[in-house]
Length: 277
Image (tube, rainbow, N blue to C red; front, side, top):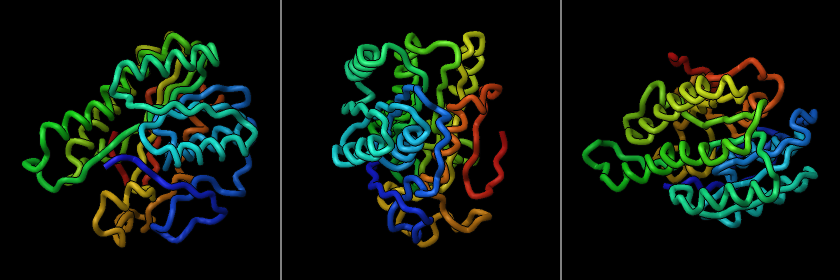
């Protein structure tokens, strides 16, 4: 089930399950990312879209990498441009080397350099037993969620210099597992190790690598993946699921000068669940 989300920007947290809140109307940007250039994979919807709009409100131009939904991508572009920033849309499959190369060449030509890379693209398919997970599903999940992420990051490193930021979306499932998202949780664990390993590798170059581990967050993907939406997020201490608008500000923090002394870390946004590591 692919990450295809619908977007709306509302001033209050909406009734659960109706639509994702992308950015609060009362969110005050303070130009934390003024003049920055950011590439966001999976930036057309849900958390990725929220990150794109928050970055724009903070003064950054963004390039959104997306696979399928032209409607969602155009809505993201509209929201970014409404903030007075530029938005580049690049459509294609990140698991294909030729497309990753095309993304790099486009950004190199248009921007010359890159300040922020957000690795957010991902998929998952819910299966309640390991026996039901096919080899094809395993391969697609790993190719999309972690293998292409490593290659995509490698491609963009030549455009990044001192002060560059790489932010990867992992998940609470990387820490506690998931009985119905076994292969997905495994990829999110791999992303966690990638964050820690790459942060150590790039520390000398002063490029910082961190992650966000969302818990239950309302996006239309949730409607596709879970049968009983009435209980979604209710097992957290806050007794509700979160909104993309409640996740994206953490990406702003990690992309800004406020996080100059943070690398190899993961911020947990999960409604109060305690996780190790």
